[in-house]
Length: 418
Image 1 (cartoon, rainbow, N blue to C red):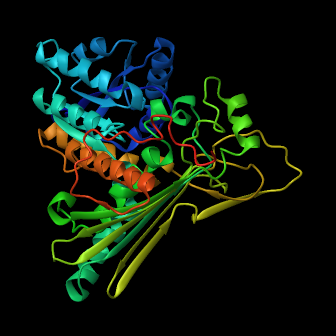
Image 2: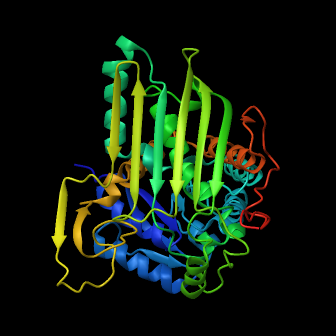
């Protein structure tokens, strides 16, 4: 029997999200991790060693230079997992290597959310990738989460044909705040929690309202958005001081905050000509067991609900146990005592495993994934419209392009406490 063909994948980015992808790769059959790149060689080597120890790659190379990783003859596809403020520079470097013929084996690229900090950035990234002739995927894990995809398929097959298409999707992502300085600084992140996490909720909502096998762009016509942003927790004196102590180089949130709460209502017209709504909520000011992802889909005679903290397993640890801080029970864990939910495999539950399996399968077959960079550009456009609505206090027409719009938060010009 001939040996199984697999795609050689290089990961660019060895931080938190890179580690998540390596963990998820244990459920990926059509690709192996063959290289890891990072701004520091030590970080690349550490994650490469983790990949080898996990059995998801052999002789995994480590690089501190983007061009060197892309030229590696074993790297047939690149996963770009680098911080937002580096994203465009990294894509420019990759596209240059491909156009110059120095990476003839490279066939595809997948890029983490959000695609850019502005529509202009996102569009340039997409144009560079398409211009280089590469297949491309937008890494939005939540539209691959099995609890969401299964419910989505069931409601569209059992509910929608009899009662009509769904009309309201709610999606929320909430936790107590990120773990790296650049997320907290609006200029490097591109904003605050709206930029960081509403990209998930918007795309999850669009996915839930769209029939299986259909691109949301073909089913949903954007109409308007009304949004609110706020600095609820981290702009308070006590917590602003905590940020300054915990993250060297972070801005003072009393003077230059990012939003730690955002809510937006996006209105669309669906393929049946009916009005539909995506309601998205995101927060860095939620203090619970840890990361909470929640979803709802409502239709004329049916509904679904999912909450990642409503787990099948829980553990109890009494107050007599002195526990070291960690994230072994749930991402962004906030406690080590009491009754705690246990997410048995976060990479599966949050959709990373199915996402990476889908992307590698498509790339290996020479097919363009359905979740493409075009979706990534549209998500950024919707986010910029939400920022515009929050800044002006009015409902914004989604037919506008927002190409050159830069949120006031990202410019350091937003402070509701002044």
